[in-house]
Amino acid sequence: MLIARVLRNDDRQAFGELVRRHQPLVRGFLRRMLGGAPELADDLAQETFIKAHRALRGFRGGAKLSVWLCAIAANELRAEWRRRARRAEFLEDDSDTAAPDLDPGLRRDLGTGLAALPEAQRAALVLCFEHGLTHEEAAAAMGCPLGTLKSHVRRGKARLRAWLDDDRETA
Amino acid sequence: MNHDDVEQRLRDSALRPQDELFTRRVLAALPRRFSPGIRSGVLRGFAAATRFGLVLLLIAVVQRWYASGAGDAESLAGITAFVALVSAATSRLCGPLIPPSLQRVLRRGW
Image 1 (tube, rainbow over the protein chains, first blue to last red):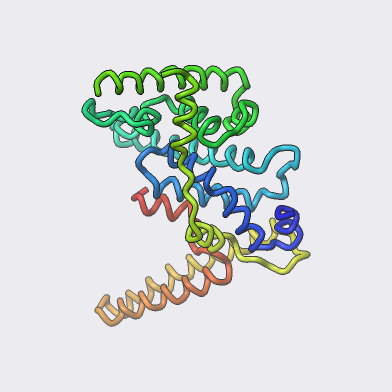
Image 2: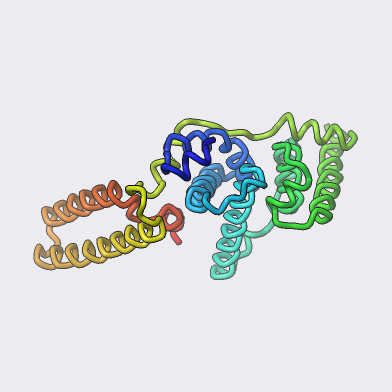
């Protein structure tokens, strides 16, 4: 087992294999959450894997590694948003933390629709549908109660559907 | 459009970036491996103290060098080469001289 190899011998090849297997989820999740900043998303993904390597001994086998990695990635994301908020506060400019200002003429594709959702709803939809986590797993990754997660999914889906329906009407 | 269509479109448009470059980048950023048997906390502390000491040493040496060379082009080139050499050697021995999280902050001007 790869985790055991990493823990026993600090086997870098085994850890590389873990990174290979889980990077589509971690990087995909962070890219969706950060919209048009793939470099920053990859920086946070790298930090996620480094922290996972450091804390792997504390990983409990009861949870799935992918869920545990998502929880670390979500923490990295929160820290990034806190940094942005502090910076915006310092500069007395809230442009960094405001919801993206979308051009009404912009093509209303799914990515744009997702970007317009509140962060918690976006995270819930991305984890549950783009990456196939169960509601329980997504709630654990986001660190929120199951009921809250289900509510984020329901509201996010309704808003996204309305967004996409608007697109079809205007087309 | 119903809820299932939304779910299906989300599944179809999932972002799943994957490349070997990223894997190599993560592996290169991991702290250096030490011989087994030594506790990892002790090793991390040792590596961090070494890095910190080296950064202080670099600052002191560069400051003295610059002061004695009066800032001419030759002395600047010498300082740059010295700093690059020590940084590369330290990165190889103790992992990145500046932690990735700090590098990110510096890159973005904060």
